[in-house]
Length: 255
Length: 219
Ligand SMILES: Nc1ncnc2c1ncn2[C@@H]1O[C@H](COP(=O)(O)OP(=O)(O)OP(=O)(O)O)[C@@H](O)[C@H]1O
Ligand SMILES: [Mg+2]
Image (tube, rainbow over all chains, first blue to last red; front, side, top):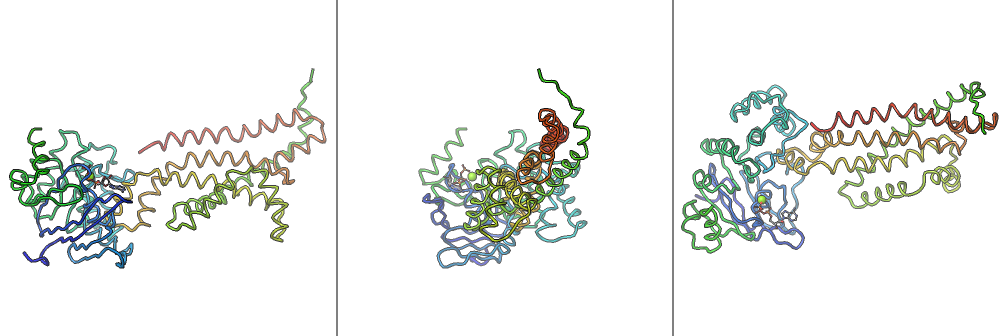
Protein backbone atom coordinates (compact mmCIF):
# COMPACT_ATOMS: atom_id res chain seq x y z
CA UNK A 1 0.00 0.00 0.00
CA UNK A 2 1.21 3.50 -0.71
CA UNK A 3 2.15 5.76 2.19
CA UNK A 4 -0.87 7.98 1.57
CA UNK A 5 -3.32 5.16 2.03
CA UNK A 6 -1.96 4.58 5.50
CA UNK A 7 -3.95 5.71 8.51
CA UNK A 8 -0.86 6.53 10.52
CA UNK A 9 2.58 7.28 9.30
CA UNK A 10 5.41 8.29 11.53
CA UNK A 11 8.96 8.99 10.55
CA UNK A 12 12.12 9.87 12.41
CA UNK A 13 10.49 10.51 15.77
CA UNK A 14 12.96 11.35 18.54
CA UNK A 15 12.24 12.16 22.14
CA UNK A 16 14.54 12.83 25.07
CA UNK A 17 13.70 13.58 28.68
CA UNK A 18 16.56 15.80 29.78
CA UNK A 19 19.56 13.84 28.51
CA UNK A 20 17.78 10.50 28.50
CA UNK A 21 17.23 9.61 24.83
CA UNK A 22 14.02 7.55 24.97
CA UNK A 23 12.88 7.38 21.34
CA UNK A 24 15.68 7.12 18.80
CA UNK A 25 14.16 7.57 15.39
CA UNK A 26 10.88 5.72 15.11
CA UNK A 27 9.43 4.98 11.64
CA UNK A 28 6.04 3.43 11.53
CA UNK A 29 3.21 2.93 9.05
CA UNK A 30 -0.18 1.58 9.98
CA UNK A 31 -3.05 0.87 7.60
CA UNK A 32 -6.65 1.66 8.25
CA UNK A 33 -8.25 -1.14 10.23
CA UNK A 34 -4.93 -2.66 11.15
CA UNK A 35 -4.38 -3.95 14.69
CA UNK A 36 -0.83 -3.50 15.88
CA UNK A 37 0.62 -5.03 19.02
CA UNK A 38 3.51 -3.00 20.41
CA UNK A 39 5.71 -5.06 22.71
CA UNK A 40 9.11 -4.84 24.30
CA UNK A 41 10.92 -4.79 27.64
CA UNK A 42 10.13 -2.25 30.34
CA UNK A 43 11.62 1.15 29.60
CA UNK A 44 11.93 0.51 25.87
CA UNK A 45 9.73 3.54 25.09
CA UNK A 46 6.39 1.93 24.23
CA UNK A 47 4.32 4.28 26.37
CA UNK A 48 6.31 7.28 25.23
CA UNK A 49 5.67 6.38 21.59
CA UNK A 50 1.97 5.94 22.22
CA UNK A 51 1.83 9.25 24.08
CA UNK A 52 3.63 10.95 21.20
CA UNK A 53 0.93 9.62 18.89
CA UNK A 54 -1.67 11.70 20.69
CA UNK A 55 0.63 14.55 21.66
CA UNK A 56 0.52 13.94 25.40
CA UNK A 57 4.27 13.98 24.81
CA UNK A 58 5.56 16.35 22.15
CA UNK A 59 8.32 14.73 20.07
CA UNK A 60 11.60 16.63 19.76
CA UNK A 61 12.06 15.77 16.10
CA UNK A 62 10.30 13.94 13.33
CA UNK A 63 7.09 13.82 11.39
CA UNK A 64 3.73 12.36 12.19
CA UNK A 65 0.51 11.99 10.26
CA UNK A 66 -2.74 10.49 11.52
CA UNK A 67 -5.61 10.64 9.03
CA UNK A 68 -5.43 14.08 7.50
CA UNK A 69 -3.63 15.76 10.41
CA UNK A 70 0.05 16.18 9.87
CA UNK A 71 2.71 17.53 12.22
CA UNK A 72 6.38 18.23 11.85
CA UNK A 73 8.52 18.56 14.94
CA UNK A 74 11.99 19.89 15.35
CA UNK A 75 14.04 23.05 15.28
CA UNK A 76 12.25 25.71 13.26
CA UNK A 77 8.94 23.83 13.27
CA UNK A 78 6.18 25.62 15.07
CA UNK A 79 4.48 23.77 17.88
CA UNK A 80 0.80 23.20 17.13
CA UNK A 81 -1.46 25.51 19.17
CA UNK A 82 -3.52 24.16 22.07
CA UNK A 83 -6.71 24.17 19.97
CA UNK A 84 -5.06 22.21 17.13
CA UNK A 85 -3.58 19.78 19.63
CA UNK A 86 -6.98 19.27 21.24
CA UNK A 87 -8.69 18.60 17.90
CA UNK A 88 -5.97 16.16 16.99
CA UNK A 89 -6.26 14.31 20.30
CA UNK A 90 -10.01 14.08 19.84
CA UNK A 91 -9.26 11.91 16.82
CA UNK A 92 -7.10 9.40 18.73
CA UNK A 93 -8.69 7.51 21.59
CA UNK A 94 -6.44 6.56 24.47
CA UNK A 95 -6.98 3.90 27.11
CA UNK A 96 -4.68 4.01 30.12
CA UNK A 97 -3.35 1.30 32.39
CA UNK A 98 -4.93 2.92 35.43
CA UNK A 99 -8.23 3.80 33.71
CA UNK A 100 -8.11 7.46 34.77
CA UNK A 101 -11.87 7.72 34.95
CA UNK A 102 -13.16 11.01 36.32
CA UNK A 103 -14.17 10.10 39.88
CA UNK A 104 -16.46 13.11 40.38
CA UNK A 105 -18.64 12.16 37.42
CA UNK A 106 -21.01 9.24 37.02
CA UNK A 107 -20.24 6.48 34.54
CA UNK A 108 -22.47 7.95 31.87
CA UNK A 109 -21.14 11.46 32.46
CA UNK A 110 -17.64 10.10 31.98
CA UNK A 111 -18.66 8.82 28.57
CA UNK A 112 -20.54 12.01 27.71
CA UNK A 113 -17.67 14.32 28.70
CA UNK A 114 -15.80 14.19 25.39
CA UNK A 115 -18.79 14.61 23.05
CA UNK A 116 -20.22 17.36 25.26
CA UNK A 117 -17.15 19.43 25.99
CA UNK A 118 -14.71 18.62 23.21
CA UNK A 119 -17.25 18.40 20.38
CA UNK A 120 -19.98 20.66 21.78
CA UNK A 121 -22.67 18.02 21.27
CA UNK A 122 -26.04 18.64 22.94
CA UNK A 123 -26.89 16.91 26.19
CA UNK A 124 -29.54 14.56 24.81
CA UNK A 125 -27.50 13.49 21.79
CA UNK A 126 -24.44 12.88 23.97
CA UNK A 127 -26.54 10.88 26.40
CA UNK A 128 -27.99 8.70 23.65
CA UNK A 129 -24.52 8.07 22.29
CA UNK A 130 -23.15 7.24 25.74
CA UNK A 131 -26.03 4.83 26.39
CA UNK A 132 -25.35 3.00 23.16
CA UNK A 133 -21.66 2.69 24.03
CA UNK A 134 -22.39 1.47 27.56
CA UNK A 135 -24.61 -1.22 26.04
CA UNK A 136 -21.76 -2.11 23.70
CA UNK A 137 -19.36 -2.66 26.62
CA UNK A 138 -22.07 -4.37 28.66
CA UNK A 139 -22.45 -1.74 31.38
CA UNK A 140 -25.81 -0.13 30.66
CA UNK A 141 -26.99 -0.92 34.19
CA UNK A 142 -24.04 0.98 35.69
CA UNK A 143 -24.80 4.27 33.93
CA UNK A 144 -25.63 6.11 37.15
CA UNK A 145 -22.86 4.55 39.26
CA UNK A 146 -19.72 6.39 40.29
CA UNK A 147 -16.41 4.94 39.07
CA UNK A 148 -15.37 3.88 42.58
CA UNK A 149 -18.35 1.51 42.70
CA UNK A 150 -17.00 -0.49 39.77
CA UNK A 151 -14.53 -3.36 39.53
CA UNK A 152 -11.30 -2.79 37.64
CA UNK A 153 -12.60 -4.59 34.58
CA UNK A 154 -15.75 -2.52 34.58
CA UNK A 155 -13.73 0.67 34.97
CA UNK A 156 -11.60 -0.18 31.99
CA UNK A 157 -14.65 -0.96 29.88
CA UNK A 158 -16.08 2.45 30.79
CA UNK A 159 -12.75 4.02 29.84
CA UNK A 160 -12.95 2.30 26.45
CA UNK A 161 -16.51 3.57 25.97
CA UNK A 162 -15.37 7.06 26.97
CA UNK A 163 -12.65 7.01 24.30
CA UNK A 164 -14.97 5.53 21.66
CA UNK A 165 -17.50 8.30 22.26
CA UNK A 166 -15.23 10.65 20.35
CA UNK A 167 -15.39 8.34 17.30
CA UNK A 168 -11.62 8.35 16.99
CA UNK A 169 -9.84 7.20 13.86
CA UNK A 170 -7.48 5.11 15.95
CA UNK A 171 -7.52 3.65 19.46
CA UNK A 172 -4.35 3.49 21.55
CA UNK A 173 -4.22 1.03 24.44
CA UNK A 174 -1.38 1.34 26.96
CA UNK A 175 -1.31 -1.88 28.98
CA UNK A 176 -5.05 -1.74 29.38
CA UNK A 177 -5.18 -4.98 31.38
CA UNK A 178 -1.97 -4.76 33.41
CA UNK A 179 -3.61 -3.26 36.49
CA UNK A 180 -6.44 -5.80 36.56
CA UNK A 181 -6.91 -8.85 38.72
CA UNK A 182 -6.32 -11.89 36.50
CA UNK A 183 -9.97 -12.96 36.51
CA UNK A 184 -11.02 -9.53 35.15
CA UNK A 185 -8.63 -9.44 32.21
CA UNK A 186 -10.76 -11.43 29.79
CA UNK A 187 -13.81 -9.14 29.91
CA UNK A 188 -11.64 -6.22 28.78
CA UNK A 189 -9.82 -8.25 26.14
CA UNK A 190 -13.11 -9.41 24.69
CA UNK A 191 -14.24 -5.80 24.24
CA UNK A 192 -10.95 -5.07 22.50
CA UNK A 193 -11.31 -8.17 20.36
CA UNK A 194 -14.75 -7.04 19.29
CA UNK A 195 -13.42 -3.60 18.33
CA UNK A 196 -10.70 -5.20 16.26
CA UNK A 197 -13.29 -7.35 14.50
CA UNK A 198 -15.30 -4.23 13.67
CA UNK A 199 -12.32 -2.84 11.80
CA UNK A 200 -11.07 -0.27 14.32
CA UNK A 201 -7.47 0.78 13.79
CA UNK A 202 -5.70 -0.05 17.03
CA UNK A 203 -2.27 0.11 18.59
CA UNK A 204 -2.06 -2.09 21.64
CA UNK A 205 0.81 -2.07 24.12
CA UNK A 206 0.42 -5.33 25.98
CA UNK A 207 2.09 -8.18 27.81
CA UNK A 208 -0.77 -10.54 26.92
CA UNK A 209 1.18 -12.41 24.27
CA UNK A 210 -1.45 -14.97 23.38
CA UNK A 211 -4.01 -12.22 22.93
CA UNK A 212 -1.56 -10.28 20.75
CA UNK A 213 -0.86 -13.35 18.65
CA UNK A 214 -4.58 -13.88 18.22
CA UNK A 215 -5.79 -10.39 17.47
CA UNK A 216 -2.89 -8.43 16.01
CA UNK A 217 -2.26 -8.15 12.28
CA UNK A 218 1.18 -6.85 12.98
CA UNK A 219 3.57 -6.98 15.89
CA UNK A 220 6.25 -4.43 16.60
CA UNK A 221 9.06 -5.24 18.99
CA UNK A 222 10.81 -2.25 20.56
CA UNK A 223 13.99 -2.08 22.53
CA UNK A 224 15.96 0.90 23.76
CA UNK A 225 13.86 3.43 21.91
CA UNK A 226 14.05 1.68 18.55
CA UNK A 227 11.90 -0.66 16.54
CA UNK A 228 13.94 -3.82 16.34
CA UNK A 229 11.56 -6.16 14.61
CA UNK A 230 8.17 -5.99 12.95
CA UNK A 231 5.96 -8.36 11.02
CA UNK A 232 3.17 -10.81 11.66
CA UNK A 233 2.96 -11.98 15.26
CA UNK A 234 4.20 -15.40 14.27
CA UNK A 235 7.22 -13.97 12.46
CA UNK A 236 8.18 -11.70 15.33
CA UNK A 237 7.47 -14.09 18.19
CA UNK A 238 8.66 -17.36 16.72
CA UNK A 239 11.06 -16.66 13.90
CA UNK A 240 12.96 -13.50 14.80
CA UNK A 241 16.68 -13.54 14.06
CA UNK A 242 17.20 -10.76 16.57
CA UNK A 243 18.74 -12.06 19.82
CA UNK A 244 17.01 -9.49 22.06
CA UNK A 245 13.65 -10.37 20.54
CA UNK A 246 14.39 -14.07 20.93
CA UNK A 247 15.27 -13.75 24.58
CA UNK A 248 12.28 -11.46 25.25
CA UNK A 249 9.78 -13.92 23.77
CA UNK A 250 11.44 -16.98 25.28
CA UNK A 251 10.67 -15.51 28.72
CA UNK A 252 7.01 -15.43 27.78
CA UNK A 253 7.00 -18.97 26.45
CA UNK A 254 8.40 -20.29 29.70
CA UNK A 255 5.90 -18.35 31.79
CA UNK B 1 -6.72 35.62 97.08
CA UNK B 2 -8.27 37.21 94.00
CA UNK B 3 -12.04 37.61 94.12
CA UNK B 4 -13.54 37.08 90.65
CA UNK B 5 -16.34 39.48 89.86
CA UNK B 6 -17.88 39.52 86.40
CA UNK B 7 -20.78 41.79 87.30
CA UNK B 8 -19.10 45.09 86.27
CA UNK B 9 -18.81 43.74 82.71
CA UNK B 10 -22.55 43.63 82.17
CA UNK B 11 -22.81 47.31 81.40
CA UNK B 12 -20.24 46.89 78.61
CA UNK B 13 -22.31 44.28 76.81
CA UNK B 14 -23.17 46.61 73.92
CA UNK B 15 -19.54 47.56 73.57
CA UNK B 16 -18.67 43.89 73.26
CA UNK B 17 -21.47 43.27 70.78
CA UNK B 18 -20.14 46.13 68.69
CA UNK B 19 -16.67 44.62 68.85
CA UNK B 20 -17.99 41.21 67.86
CA UNK B 21 -19.77 42.75 64.90
CA UNK B 22 -16.60 44.56 63.78
CA UNK B 23 -14.51 41.40 64.13
CA UNK B 24 -16.99 39.30 62.17
CA UNK B 25 -17.42 41.88 59.40
CA UNK B 26 -13.66 42.33 59.17
CA UNK B 27 -13.15 38.57 59.00
CA UNK B 28 -15.76 38.19 56.27
CA UNK B 29 -14.10 40.92 54.23
CA UNK B 30 -10.59 39.54 54.58
CA UNK B 31 -11.75 36.00 53.80
CA UNK B 32 -13.28 37.12 50.52
CA UNK B 33 -10.39 39.38 49.56
CA UNK B 34 -7.87 36.86 50.87
CA UNK B 35 -9.37 34.13 48.70
CA UNK B 36 -9.00 36.39 45.68
CA UNK B 37 -5.35 37.03 46.58
CA UNK B 38 -4.93 33.30 47.14
CA UNK B 39 -6.43 32.39 43.77
CA UNK B 40 -4.18 34.87 42.01
CA UNK B 41 -1.16 33.64 43.98
CA UNK B 42 -1.92 30.00 43.14
CA UNK B 43 -2.56 30.81 39.48
CA UNK B 44 0.78 32.60 39.41
CA UNK B 45 2.55 29.63 40.97
CA UNK B 46 1.11 27.27 38.35
CA UNK B 47 1.62 29.66 35.45
CA UNK B 48 3.60 28.77 32.35
CA UNK B 49 5.41 32.07 32.65
CA UNK B 50 8.48 32.16 34.82
CA UNK B 51 8.05 35.82 35.74
CA UNK B 52 4.56 35.16 37.16
CA UNK B 53 5.79 32.12 39.07
CA UNK B 54 8.57 34.21 40.49
CA UNK B 55 6.37 37.17 41.46
CA UNK B 56 3.78 34.97 43.15
CA UNK B 57 6.50 33.09 44.98
CA UNK B 58 7.87 36.37 46.26
CA UNK B 59 4.43 37.49 47.41
CA UNK B 60 3.55 34.20 49.10
CA UNK B 61 6.83 33.72 50.89
CA UNK B 62 7.10 37.35 52.00
CA UNK B 63 3.67 37.38 53.61
CA UNK B 64 3.94 33.90 55.04
CA UNK B 65 7.25 34.48 56.73
CA UNK B 66 6.84 37.95 58.22
CA UNK B 67 4.78 38.43 61.39
CA UNK B 68 1.28 39.75 60.80
CA UNK B 69 1.81 42.37 63.48
CA UNK B 70 4.78 43.75 61.58
CA UNK B 71 2.77 43.80 58.36
CA UNK B 72 -0.09 45.69 60.01
CA UNK B 73 2.17 48.32 61.47
CA UNK B 74 4.16 48.61 58.28
CA UNK B 75 1.12 49.00 56.01
CA UNK B 76 -0.43 51.58 58.35
CA UNK B 77 2.62 53.70 59.13
CA UNK B 78 5.29 53.03 56.49
CA UNK B 79 3.25 52.53 53.32
CA UNK B 80 1.72 56.04 53.40
CA UNK B 81 5.18 57.56 53.72
CA UNK B 82 6.49 55.53 50.77
CA UNK B 83 3.45 55.80 48.50
CA UNK B 84 1.90 59.06 49.66
CA UNK B 85 -1.46 57.29 49.99
CA UNK B 86 -3.03 57.79 53.39
CA UNK B 87 -4.89 54.68 54.61
CA UNK B 88 -7.53 54.58 57.30
CA UNK B 89 -6.89 52.08 60.07
CA UNK B 90 -9.66 49.85 58.75
CA UNK B 91 -8.29 49.90 55.18
CA UNK B 92 -4.78 49.16 56.39
CA UNK B 93 -6.13 46.29 58.48
CA UNK B 94 -8.18 44.85 55.61
CA UNK B 95 -5.30 45.22 53.17
CA UNK B 96 -2.66 43.51 55.27
CA UNK B 97 -4.95 40.78 56.61
CA UNK B 98 -6.11 39.98 53.07
CA UNK B 99 -2.59 39.77 51.73
CA UNK B 100 -1.45 37.75 54.72
CA UNK B 101 -4.39 35.34 54.52
CA UNK B 102 -4.07 35.18 50.75
CA UNK B 103 -0.53 33.89 51.00
CA UNK B 104 -1.77 30.92 53.04
CA UNK B 105 -4.84 30.38 50.86
CA UNK B 106 -2.57 30.39 47.80
CA UNK B 107 -0.61 27.46 49.17
CA UNK B 108 -3.79 25.55 50.01
CA UNK B 109 -5.23 26.15 46.55
CA UNK B 110 -2.01 25.31 44.75
CA UNK B 111 -1.57 22.20 46.89
CA UNK B 112 -5.12 21.09 46.13
CA UNK B 113 -4.59 21.44 42.40
CA UNK B 114 -1.26 19.64 42.25
CA UNK B 115 -2.58 16.85 44.47
CA UNK B 116 -4.86 15.70 41.65
CA UNK B 117 -3.38 12.73 39.79
CA UNK B 118 -1.79 13.94 36.52
CA UNK B 119 -3.57 11.00 34.88
CA UNK B 120 -6.79 12.97 35.28
CA UNK B 121 -5.53 15.85 33.13
CA UNK B 122 -4.06 13.40 30.66
CA UNK B 123 -7.36 11.60 30.31
CA UNK B 124 -9.12 14.92 29.75
CA UNK B 125 -6.56 16.08 27.20
CA UNK B 126 -6.67 12.70 25.46
CA UNK B 127 -10.41 13.15 24.95
CA UNK B 128 -9.68 16.37 23.10
CA UNK B 129 -10.60 18.85 25.83
CA UNK B 130 -8.57 22.06 25.79
CA UNK B 131 -6.25 22.64 28.76
CA UNK B 132 -8.53 25.31 30.23
CA UNK B 133 -11.56 22.99 29.96
CA UNK B 134 -9.54 20.25 31.65
CA UNK B 135 -8.75 22.65 34.47
CA UNK B 136 -12.34 23.80 34.89
CA UNK B 137 -14.20 20.53 34.35
CA UNK B 138 -11.80 17.85 35.57
CA UNK B 139 -9.12 19.21 37.91
CA UNK B 140 -10.77 22.06 39.82
CA UNK B 141 -13.96 20.21 40.83
CA UNK B 142 -11.84 17.47 42.37
CA UNK B 143 -9.26 19.82 43.84
CA UNK B 144 -11.95 22.05 45.32
CA UNK B 145 -13.31 19.22 47.45
CA UNK B 146 -9.88 18.66 48.91
CA UNK B 147 -9.34 22.36 49.48
CA UNK B 148 -12.52 23.04 51.42
CA UNK B 149 -11.41 21.69 54.83
CA UNK B 150 -8.01 23.45 54.85
CA UNK B 151 -9.61 26.63 53.51
CA UNK B 152 -12.11 26.49 56.36
CA UNK B 153 -9.36 25.95 58.90
CA UNK B 154 -7.40 28.85 57.48
CA UNK B 155 -10.51 31.04 57.64
CA UNK B 156 -10.99 30.15 61.29
CA UNK B 157 -7.44 31.30 61.91
CA UNK B 158 -8.30 34.50 60.08
CA UNK B 159 -10.92 35.27 62.68
CA UNK B 160 -8.35 34.97 65.44
CA UNK B 161 -5.84 36.99 63.43
CA UNK B 162 -8.20 39.94 63.26
CA UNK B 163 -7.62 40.46 67.00
CA UNK B 164 -4.27 42.04 66.13
CA UNK B 165 -5.95 45.00 64.43
CA UNK B 166 -6.75 46.46 67.84
CA UNK B 167 -3.26 47.96 67.80
CA UNK B 168 -4.39 50.21 64.94
CA UNK B 169 -7.38 51.24 67.09
CA UNK B 170 -9.82 49.33 64.89
CA UNK B 171 -12.72 48.79 67.31
CA UNK B 172 -12.82 44.98 67.25
CA UNK B 173 -13.52 42.68 70.22
CA UNK B 174 -10.09 43.09 71.65
CA UNK B 175 -10.02 46.84 71.30
CA UNK B 176 -13.31 47.11 73.16
CA UNK B 177 -11.91 44.79 75.79
CA UNK B 178 -9.03 47.16 76.32
CA UNK B 179 -11.46 50.01 76.82
CA UNK B 180 -13.53 47.99 79.28
CA UNK B 181 -10.37 47.06 81.15
CA UNK B 182 -9.32 50.66 81.52
CA UNK B 183 -12.75 51.55 82.94
CA UNK B 184 -13.19 48.63 85.30
CA UNK B 185 -9.65 47.65 86.28
CA UNK B 186 -10.86 44.07 85.85
CA UNK B 187 -8.48 42.70 83.17
CA UNK B 188 -8.78 39.08 84.30
CA UNK B 189 -12.55 39.06 83.98
CA UNK B 190 -12.49 41.04 80.75
CA UNK B 191 -9.99 38.79 79.01
CA UNK B 192 -11.67 35.67 80.31
CA UNK B 193 -14.88 36.95 78.76
CA UNK B 194 -13.05 37.71 75.51
CA UNK B 195 -11.60 34.20 75.42
CA UNK B 196 -15.06 32.75 75.96
CA UNK B 197 -16.46 34.89 73.16
CA UNK B 198 -13.81 33.54 70.73
CA UNK B 199 -14.47 29.98 71.84
CA UNK B 200 -18.21 30.43 71.49
CA UNK B 201 -17.86 31.72 67.96
CA UNK B 202 -15.14 29.37 66.72
CA UNK B 203 -16.11 26.10 68.37
CA UNK B 204 -19.19 25.57 66.19
CA UNK B 205 -17.20 26.56 63.13
CA UNK B 206 -14.37 24.12 63.83
CA UNK B 207 -16.97 21.43 64.40
CA UNK B 208 -18.49 22.32 61.05
CA UNK B 209 -15.06 22.14 59.39
CA UNK B 210 -14.48 18.69 60.89
CA UNK B 211 -17.88 17.58 59.72
CA UNK B 212 -17.26 18.84 56.18
CA UNK B 213 -13.88 17.14 56.17
CA UNK B 214 -15.53 13.82 56.89
CA UNK B 215 -18.35 14.42 54.43
CA UNK B 216 -16.00 15.32 51.60
CA UNK B 217 -13.54 12.55 52.35
CA UNK B 218 -13.72 10.79 49.00
CA UNK B 219 -16.24 9.89 46.40
N1 LIG C 1 7.83 12.22 31.59
C1 LIG C 1 9.01 11.58 31.69
N2 LIG C 1 10.07 12.20 32.25
C2 LIG C 1 11.26 11.60 32.34
N3 LIG C 1 11.51 10.35 31.92
C3 LIG C 1 10.50 9.67 31.36
C4 LIG C 1 9.20 10.25 31.22
N4 LIG C 1 8.39 9.34 30.63
C5 LIG C 1 9.16 8.26 30.42
N5 LIG C 1 10.42 8.43 30.84
C6 LIG C 1 11.51 7.47 30.75
O1 LIG C 1 11.56 7.00 29.44
C7 LIG C 1 11.89 5.63 29.40
C8 LIG C 1 10.86 4.90 28.57
O2 LIG C 1 9.62 4.93 29.27
P1 LIG C 1 8.30 4.31 28.72
O3 LIG C 1 7.29 4.54 29.76
O4 LIG C 1 8.03 4.82 27.36
O5 LIG C 1 8.68 2.79 28.63
P2 LIG C 1 7.72 1.54 28.41
O6 LIG C 1 8.29 0.79 27.26
O7 LIG C 1 6.32 1.97 28.32
O8 LIG C 1 7.96 0.70 29.73
P3 LIG C 1 6.91 -0.11 30.62
O9 LIG C 1 6.77 -1.46 29.97
O10 LIG C 1 7.60 -0.22 31.94
O11 LIG C 1 5.65 0.66 30.66
C9 LIG C 1 11.94 5.15 30.83
O12 LIG C 1 13.29 5.05 31.20
C10 LIG C 1 11.27 6.25 31.60
O13 LIG C 1 11.86 6.38 32.87
MG1 LIG D 1 4.62 1.80 29.55
